[in-house]
Image (cartoon, rainbow, N blue to C red; front, side, top):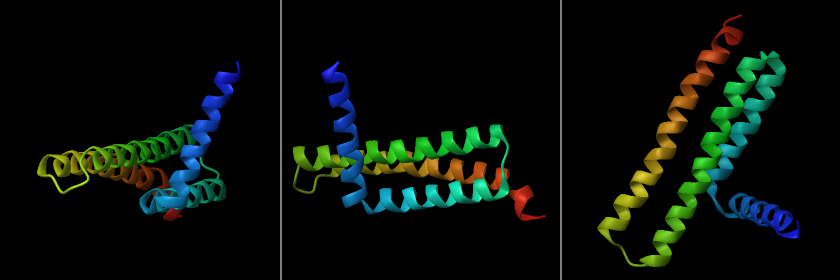
Length: 116
């Protein structure tokens, strides 16, 4: 049981590390907090909440994964390497794709509230 709780401590430490050192994660987390505030303000529906939370979780989780991939690449190959660059670019593209689709979903959800 102790090992189970230790895994939460490791995850929280990782989250704190992201907040302390990763600019992109901080920006995305601030956007998440703003979206939460807007969602409360407009009193969005339960289904809309599900989409907002799912999209936000995917963007933040994928940014964390992207960061770990970049750090692993830098550890394995500290010097500039074209193959490592491609890996890092594709990893960043995954975050970009999910972010763009999440943005579109956000526009679809909030459009009706904003045009009132």
